[in-house]
Length: 409
Image 1 (cartoon, rainbow, N blue to C red):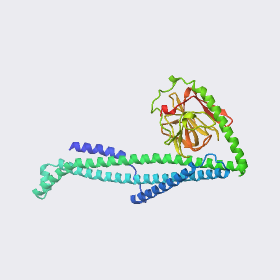
Image 2: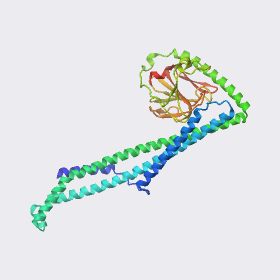
Image 3: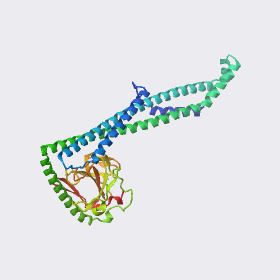
């Protein structure tokens, strides 16, 4: 009997710590599930719209040959970003509803635990009273000897059912813990979505500014646009040649002992997508052009706004914006192991200089800023001992001795 009482006391202490404030909801669980299903349907529809915009943008060029086409391209990009924002807002609503549903579930489980605890307490009380009464007292308290035997059998049944009641409470507690963990996961996801929404609003603002800037520069005149486009392309190609001439020399200064040995898994892929250009001489990478003859990283196909993750734990070394030249918006991360990774052509950032990041953490969003023929991610791996950032007239420029990223991915 004392063993049962001890188990009960321990269980009461444990479950009391776990009990949460009861959440009162004006909606039934069925109504919440219906709303969540409706939000999921909206999410699917928005994803279809975004896929259609992405397909349309894939067929367009980063720098269209006519002003009208370029403006139309930028307007489509704005519509796509607006759809991205609406999608994120809908995901936030769905996640909030899921948290509410889980809170409702947690409250219900808490009430059931309290009910089971009360039942168990009453059982303990009855058994305890029976154990402390003398046989004579029990007989005298019964109307008949038959009643006495029935009471004895009832107490024996209560004793044999104690473990089952304890098991029931333990199972309820386990389910409560699962619901609490899921609720915390949803809250973490909600926080990430709120950050994403803020960043996507910035991306939209940037795109609108770029569109307005182009209209201001050209005064909506085709001739002015063609002149701007011609001058821009010449400058882009010259800057690209200068960069790769400098990095040709820096690659020769890499000390093999200062970098990790080549093996898969040292770095993680920063983005899921098709590899559109490899590392090395352009005659071998599948992208021959007049601007440069060596590609210092790999290119991964992406849609503007796609989340890009850090390839490993590290510290944000530098962030720059080269405008329409070189890498456009870029981020460099020092992994503290002899390697620095560079991510180029972003449409927006999600981190700041000096910030510590984890592998897989979102650091920015893919785009087609800089010298780019379409939305994608440019990913370079540098030997950190060779890396530097130079201040150019068009922005901060990262330079270093590059290594084939495929040696580490």
